[in-house]
Amino acid sequence: MERFELYIPKLEELWFRQKILSDPKTMSYNANWDVKFEGYHKDTGCVDFPKEEWASWHKEWIGNEPKRFYAYIKRTSDGAWIGDVNFHYTEENDWWDMGIVIYAPYRGQSYAVPALKLMLDHAFHNCGISRIHNDFDLARKEYSAWETHRKAGFKELGMENGFMQMMITREEYLK
Image (cartoon, rainbow, N blue to C red; front, top):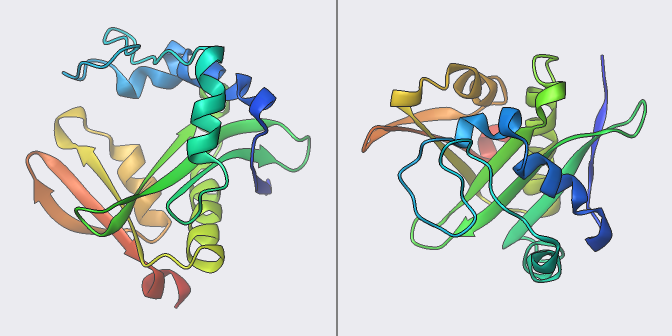
């Protein structure tokens, strides 16, 4: 079984985040949302991440735990970065929202659940946060993403505005 670790990228290593965000196969899950923000490409789901923005993004996301956390998922056998994970505090709901993206060439290899569990372990053990949330648009039929979260211990909270709400608490994870 493959082993993974979380890797906090240095500023000059954000080229991998840029690569993920600009890859249409990786970002296909993000396509066709009805949102308007600069740099979003509705047709592919890709998001611009120009080098000029790296420093401010890095300052906001790196070293700001437990409010924000971002890391690459590193395969220990060869050091390859296979995706990324993140979480951030959402004050209006008093929970942390999270994200996980597996770079397209590494999908379908059963990497998502162990990577998600690594992030949860860091969140609950190292950062001491209380609960992590994610949601999924039912119209998009994101079955593999739902199943990944279930296998990692997330519970379904119910539906809200067409989105399946899922959550895991620190107590649930640590039991």
